Length: 438
Image 1 (cartoon, rainbow, N blue to C red):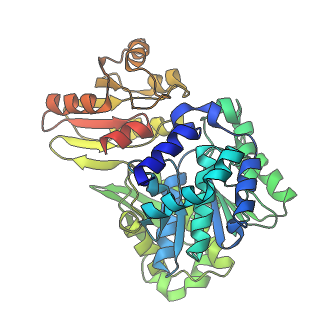
Image 2: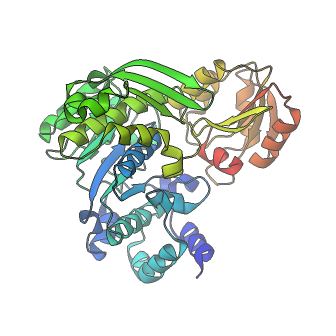
């Protein structure tokens, strides 16, 4: 099989959560353990940082990878889902895994797949671990797919665990309360392993504290460790200024002080302020356990995150006149921040190209969307996507008016035809809608 035939085989033979939803979710680690055992447990051959959370995992993972690259390390990065190419999920220093590596892996282990019958995510995790081990990465940033405790990635023993935040998403699988969702995410906290919690929430703080105490792990809340003085959106990106604590000053000395505690980053969403703080505190923890990271590494890591890692889809500017922006935020918390950000923009008329998947809390999301916009309801090309007419019908209950289009491409083209130079077109609602536009 060539590369495309190999990917088609994997899509057809192995259940893929992002395409078909909950029936693809395996609620234990058995298959991943069996796969990795057959590969001589490659996940034990390199150092790791484990990232979980409802929102912000991708930005946090890419920023940390970029900073560690700038410090001279060979850095593996595993994320999901992909936007344009499956190989985006597995990178080393920003370079995607080669097509032939995937073809060879599947050819070599197809009998094992037939025997174990893993999910798409499970075999991808095994591929990632095998590739990083063979390529001898210095460290790998490993992002969970869904949850944490039972996520396929949770067979690693990281140097640092990071949980960005907890919000309402995948409640059918992770639980119907924030405490239950937090319990699942807290599953990545390991014995005597430091953990950074990105955002505090009174309802769930104790869940993390209890788990960390049980594992004898040092837990810090990022918001308590670092004080942000100033956050400003730029035309493309953002500027953050902050007060360092003694740990930063002690480890970085004059190198740190000479830079006035300011960082520029091409990631411009207002929600990035939380991610930036989480990343900086994660760097503090890495310094504490012996990593050599200068402020210059952090400065360049933030500034070059897109160039270093290829990150896409985070408040990404696609065009001017009219201004076109896309964002992969797709749950209640993510959409809430996107709507807040849209309200801060200057435009004559707002056009929103939007599609969703069936297992999101559709009504809560629709209730957040602005009424004063022209909508272009659409359906991404996957079984899990919500029918565009059904979405249009539900939206009318919230006075959200627009036409329905069978494809994302048709909706996007119609929006571009209707929009005038001073208008704003926003594309979102689903990672897969953004992927098709990109």
